[in-house]
Amino acid sequence: MDGVRLVDVPTPALTPLQQLRTGRLPRRLVQLYVGLVLYGFSMALVLRAELGLDPWDVLHQGLAEQLGWSFGTVTIAVGALVLLLWIPLRQWPGLGTVSNVVVIGLAVDAGLAVLPPVESLPLRIGLLVAGVVLNGLAGATYLASAFGAGPRDGLMTGLVARTGRSVRLVRTCLELTVLAVGLLLGGSVGVGTVLYAVAIGPLVQLFLPLVAVRLPEPDRDADAPAVPA
Image (cartoon, rainbow, N blue to C red; front, side):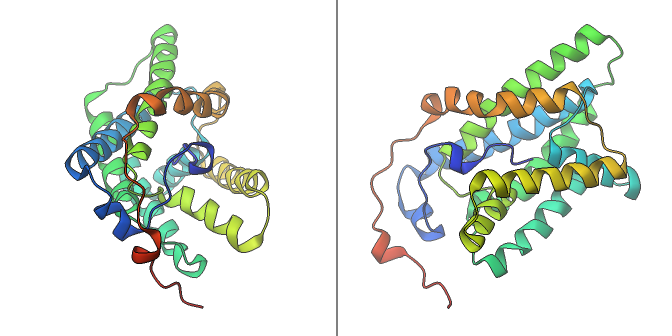
């Protein structure tokens, strides 16, 4: 679900306190929540296309089918569990991290409630393309608000920092793992999975300059929290 990787885009790395002190707070808060709502709605579009999901959503869909929960409820639950893994990795969640867990799950369920199932293949292809493009725009929008990584992105960067392995290796292992588990649970893989993997990075790079917020340089020494040894 955090298909946008912070390591792929030039967003500022700020502590939680710096995120609130950096400036332009009203604009950034609006941008954060608009981006998260659009992100959830874009996921609903891809789900209604029924042509394959990104790896984390394959896992979410498989769990939803096994547990009988809504897709959004599973997204929230998985996000919360992943966030707990930040503790041993000594990652610092921000407002955007916590909001990511809750808002996207609510938004995807709302999107599925208003979007009826679609039978026509051309319409499903249109939903898929629209969903992936909107996902790129939404991801760039909430990332540019500078309120912190999503829980799954933070897990990846935390593992990179702790293991010393490359981003490429850690990201690949994580996504292959959740994809395999999702497939075993009944999640959907298809052309949409490939399209998302190929297109999401370039789309975020395209949209990020359009939604970037100019921020002053934070005083990192004054605000940096003491990380426990």
